[in-house]
Image (cartoon, rainbow, N blue to C red; front, side):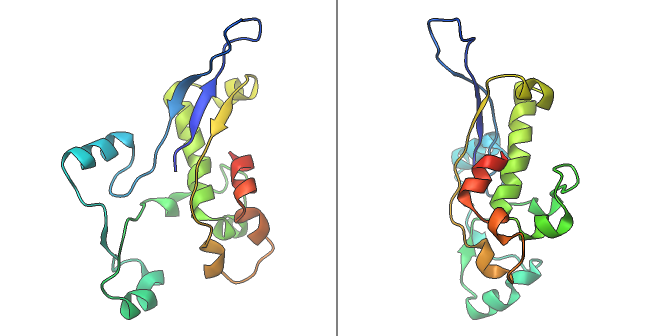
Length: 157
């Protein structure tokens, strides 16, 4: 999942080419694009056995002991208060959406752009995400529609 922030030149310019001013990436076995490049350079395998400390995987791990995965770290640190969501809504929110919201803030920070500056400028956020199966792991809830929809994910960034 990688949002990019693009800020075009002012409208009165004849040349309206956008420029990339900030980016963010979340990768397995690392935290950012630098770690990804290092992992590739060092030929590190990011596909690992399912971790023992992830208790929600216990049943799956017992049925499929040889399964490996490329896992992202840190999603449990989502600050629902910072983003104005309640704890109940955050729990129902697809982890991709939580990471995307955090990633957009990080991309802006990497570009030296504050939230206030972004809200007053013509800024575009380009995102990509994959799979929407998180909702299958949860019981029905009032926040399922807004927390597990691709269109909402793009709109929340």
